[in-house]
Length: 316
Image (cartoon, rainbow, N blue to C red; front, side):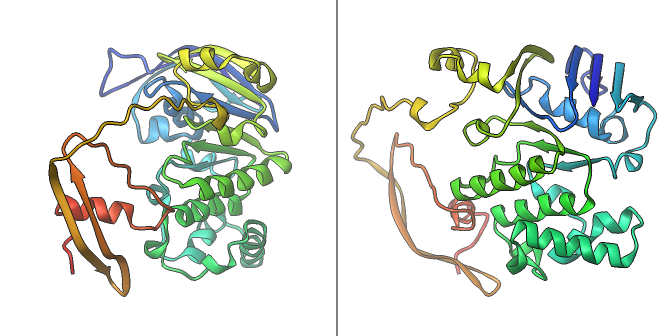
């Protein structure tokens, strides 16, 4: 069980602003809790307090009590919590310690001091459970965004913590990769693990989450079961500033205007990075006043195209 009792926190960088204000929350063992709310509402701060990044990496003033299984975690170093809590971050690159995928899966168990046979068994089990055999012995730098997120999640899974903490893990993933992420989370839940996830995207979690915590200005506005949350009207969800629970809630009233003045033109753009051709004969025109969406699967070349337009990547 996880307990936050009247917890307040202010970062040293912004001492006059309370990121959390007298927040109380209980998460039962094996429960899957979704933290949601507008950016800056305190979701990430709550997770940092739980996994120990506060105060070891983010200093500030803490008040109140945080307990895990009845024991106060104040004063515990982050490595003492490593076997108990595993974190999957929004940007998987921020949590990698190795340059190849197999070593990344071994990193957690190695740092827990497990025997070599146990480490090999855990890597094998993780590879089989996550269906990532094709990603083994690969350079992390050559993986797509979705593949990096899989390896990040798998590296935490290999350490076998009791509590999984996820901070907006879907934010950089395409639709297919989000569905794959959902399956990974379902597998962890089926094993009886406690899961706390901070997310803006709601739709992919609606049939697996147990409880919704709506936050604003460092406080909990509402705590609802998934059943109660599902009964709220679409208008209420929109008024609360939340994203859709189901695709049917997305509005379709879009005003389309005609634009004629071309201000940007790309012709036959080709970019090769190492041995991989990222962009091949890309051409399009952008007119003044247009909003253009560049979309596609993770690894399709969207970021490379945007960086090329800005001059950060040279055509070759």
